[in-house]
Image 1 (cartoon, rainbow, N blue to C red):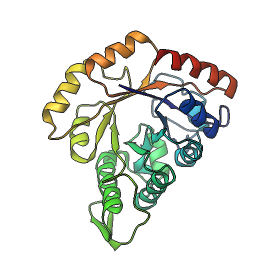
Image 2: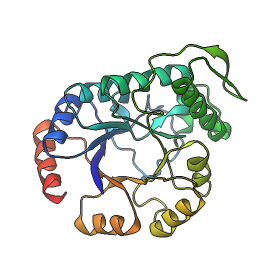
Image 3: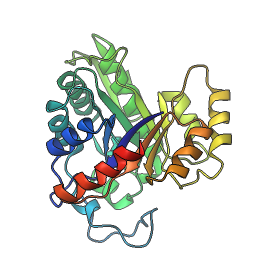
Image 4: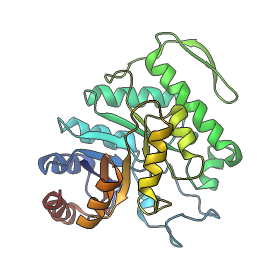
Length: 272
């Protein structure tokens, strides 16, 4: 089992370069950053994590800029999104951003994707929440085409472009892994259709995790790694996830100033 952290990098907490260095120095293998472009003031959509939306959701950095800063000061740390809101991003730009991150990091980029929960945020980007899952699928498939084809083209319901040159291509072959977030009734359909792995959030519809992983791998015709997002740093939880077949644990790292974060990472290093 591999270990990393999932967190929000904001202007309230430790910077991405300092965080990346601290993780690698302590032997942790990955850094996954969340994304929200903005939070609408008149928000109706309920946050799945509870009643009050935490402050760090309002203040998060752009994940790709922050991950590039972390990658530039590390050598082994894998840098990924947990999750990138693909339905709010232009796929041609996003393909270039991730490929550039993969080049900057020498093949350490991971693209975690999802459709999100904040419908007001989606609408501000021109996305209809009712069609967001179909949009997510097409944009991911288009991004993979841009990564892997010299003259890439895509023709779908929402994404449509004739042959284009799109560079750089990623270092990773055939491309950076795409981890599909969520744990709903149709999540495995998406993982098997356009994903390379599954990344559920700990405690959100994962009560039958071992059976879920068994079902996913039974349906798959290839290895499907499972990365568990937002894990509390407790030995019994780690043991539970290992027994269920999880490949990577991402410990939830609160957004705190540098000194507090380093002390917390010291305790994580002892656990791992």
